[in-house]
Length: 107
Image (cartoon, rainbow, N blue to C red; front, side, top):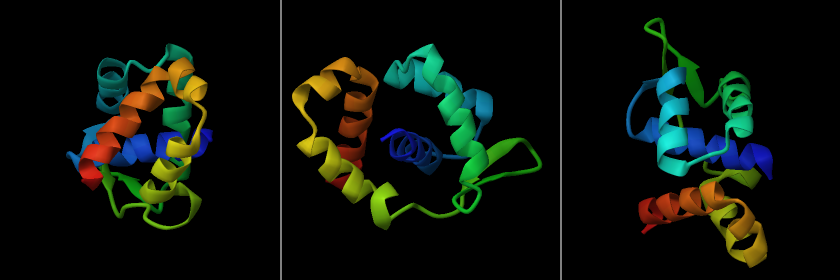
């Protein structure tokens, strides 16, 4: 479920405004309390999702379009998390916080 988590995380942050990689990482750590070993996955997501996020000349990433369809879309992601065993989210509190933030956007 890794890529779906990080694509939705980056998308959520960029919906709030353009950010540098450092700003994205700092906000992820502060707001979602993501473990340090997961940070590399955010960096990878910024590199592989060039159809959705674009790095501008000023070094900030800009959201080109939301990932709305398929397995990476927000709706499917939330449906999947709602079906996940409680233990999964308990062991990954940063995903629980992301889920709650995304649900606020949907409602």
